[in-house]
Structure formats: structure tokens, C-alpha cells
Image 1 (cartoon, one colour):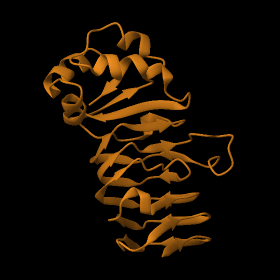
Image 2 (image 1 turned 135 degrees about the horizontal axis):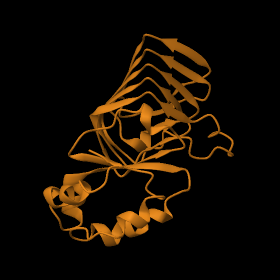
Image 3 (image 1 turned 180 degrees about the vertical axis):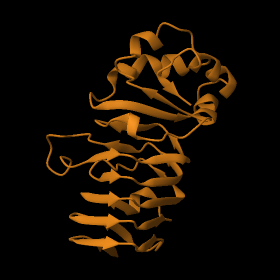
Image 4 (image 1 turned 180 degrees about the horizontal axis):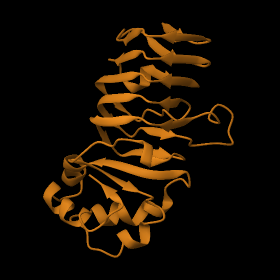
Length: 203
């Protein structure tokens, strides 16, 4: 069953997406203002089409994996909960459906982000998740500096060496230290001892 929110503006409402039998579509031509969006469905049952989220609270109750928010414009929103592999911002400015994407003035301090990318936005307007998350600003431009140091485990060989291959629109990457440390044979503390060397890494 498809549950579609489109072609309307909603204000001050509480939307709980929790129907395990439903596939949800947000957009196109949807504007949510000062709404609370509660997500209890896996990413494959959630499609985020061109939508404007203005001053919303977005509560992720079930971890979202590989969900692309870059068709949406997000302003003044607060995120909570866990996301892995999400994309935010203006990712494809020249492609239909993505041209109005963007993110500004949003708060992720109560969220847990891992392998998440920010595209074509001013990171100075965003409040990022604190340690044990960490965010690399301008990962493509800073790639040479990051590759000049020794990283613990396989993090350098797998992640750092490939930063320059990220999409050109990428302005920041956020990771969750316990997950990447476990995956690449290191500890969060070992990672942090290297992260501390760089003033363009936020944690």
C-alpha cells in the first residue's frame, strides 16, 4: 500500500510513519512547517521526493540506512536518532528533481550519523553530532593533508586514501567512531588521537 503526502502544505502537524505494510512517499510538492515527523519504517519503505522541511523535528526511531535526503530542502530542522549512509544538501544541482535540494540551519547534535555526506551547503550553519561522531570538512580539498599522517588500523587505506573520489559536491563527511573503528581494526581512542591534529575535523 502506498501512502503519499504530496501537493500540499502542512503546518504544526505530527506525522508518524509506522505502518509496516505501507510504502511512504514524501513529495513531490510537499511543504512541512513546524511539523514533527516520526520515522519507524526502514529506508526501503521511505521515499523522500522534492519536499520542503521548515523548522521541523525529525525523529528517527528505527535506524535509516542509505536514505537520500538530497531532493529535499531542509531549513531549521532538528534530527534525532541513527542514520547510516544518508546524503543531505544540494547533490545534483543540474538534475531534475534534485535542483531545489539543500540544507541550512539544522541541528544534528542529538543524532548519530555514520558514513553520511553533506553536499553543496554551508556547514557553518549546521550543528553537528558530537563525539563519538566526527565530521571531516572539505574532505576532497583536505585529502592530501589527511593522507600524510598514519591512521590506525585500515582506516587510512580504506577511507582516507579514497576521499578524493567522493562526488565533487561533497563538502563534509560524518562518521561514528565506534563503528568505523571496529570495522577497520582500531579503537575510537586511536582514531581520536589522529583527528585531534586537524582543525577542520569537528567532533
